[in-house]
Image 1 (cartoon, rainbow, N blue to C red):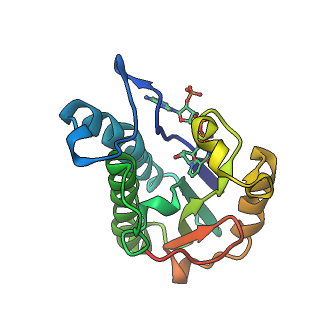
Image 2: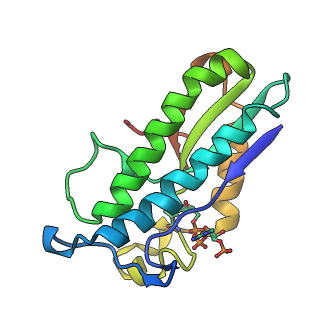
Image 3: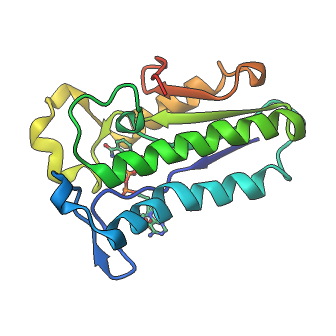
Length: 170
Ligand SMILES: NC(=O)c1ccc[n+]([C@@H]2O[C@H](COP(=O)([O-])OP(=O)(O)OC[C@H]3O[C@@H](n4cnc5c(N)ncnc54)[C@H](OP(=O)(O)O)[C@@H]3O)[C@@H](O)[C@H]2O)c1
């Protein structure tokens, strides 16, 4: 059994608020930060809460679409405070849940997946910075994710992997 949570936002409208990734500290706003955490951290956490009771005893996977910018140790260029912090929080929620899944859903691997830069509405305003060969189709990154699932071992869970199946530091 595999469950994949693809929810996430970078610049969409949430609860009537048009989100815009912050470039500097002065851009931080309470409501925007709350919206990022609601969509990128809290809703996936509720998935984790409900899935633990229904996962199969056979080898299974729960995947949350994360992002490399949510890596605390890899953060060198800053910016995008709300998106970064809410993805870092997502990663921590997955890591924490993995401890409990290890007791309650032992055959389930948890994966935070960085899909690369994918040609969707989420990345559209930022695609001009991306080399054409680094802008993936949704089909490509989905296929890469499906291929990664077969390599997961619940004893090694949780994972933070990118589209090339390389480990991303937490
Ligand atoms: N595209 C990239 O380059 C990229 C890079 C790194 C990570 N990611 C991550 O990959 C995941 C998928 O992103 P994507 O590129 O496919 O973006 P997308 O096309 O904008 O899809 C985002 C998904 O999140 C849902 N969503 C957004 N706001 C929501 C809200 N307030 N309530 C409920 N659902 C909401 C959307 O639902 P609706 O369709 O109903 O609006 C949609 O299914 C996200 O977690 C994103 O952070 C993407």
